[in-house]
Length: 135
Image (cartoon, rainbow, N blue to C red):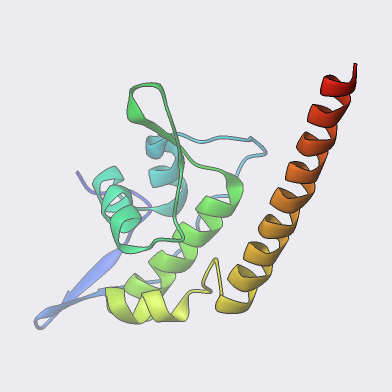
């Protein structure tokens, strides 16, 4: 089944995708995989494959492993689609072009903040235990 939004031209041994205007993203919190496929002009099986290839793409999974995408996921999918289909990048090339969700600096800062929170919570817990014993 060919998507109506995707127009392609076959040239000698390759496909060339013509840029197209994607529909406006509705003002909703969550989108199903079929809705995202229509909004981004890709098939659901492609979205599932991209989830394995691009670690930044993580839809929420609920009952029955149903995927629910948020607005930022759709923007990322559109960016991946542009890199692969319009700019001609490989999966590996597109992966390096995408902004990493966790850079090393952010990861280190987050680790420090988490360790500080744990220490604070352990202090509070210890204080509560001493109050409980004294009563």
